[in-house]
View 1: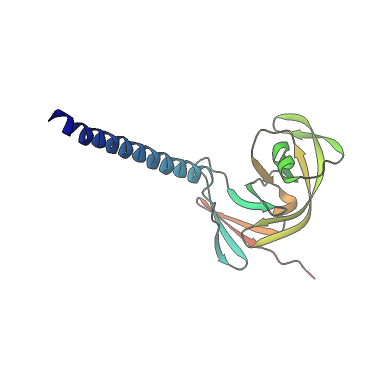
View 2: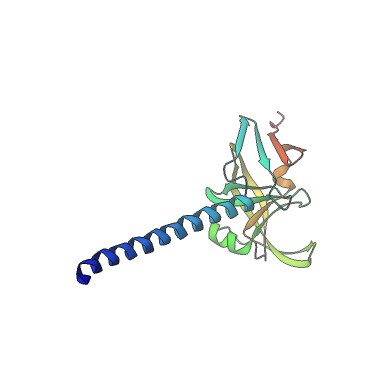
Length: 172
């Protein structure tokens, strides 16, 4: 009689193990999704109209947004204190950006050597900019700093923890 209960017990144990495994998998997925949302709350950019988008601050007060450089996905960090776009070396290598002339740059962390490069296209929400100067920087970050050479094409209005970005049509 004890042998008749062994297959039932074993099946029950297997079901409990599967239930716990599935629960752990779902919890891992949920918390990973929450962490990614905290890191970049603008993975899906809200478009107000054809000329405006809205970005939410991340938990550190920065404005990050998903976009693309040369049709490849990147995460932008809007930096109104940066003169030009800055692309970390690892991201530049992934994007296949050409490494140009070296130059010495003063940053908040001191002087570093960067390299000139050109970006064929940059997309942020419905906006696309073409033929932009950028600097390849020695950095461990994954974010592309969106400097004023790109941001000058937009009007930036911050209210509370949101920034509205409106494309400024080029003057004829």
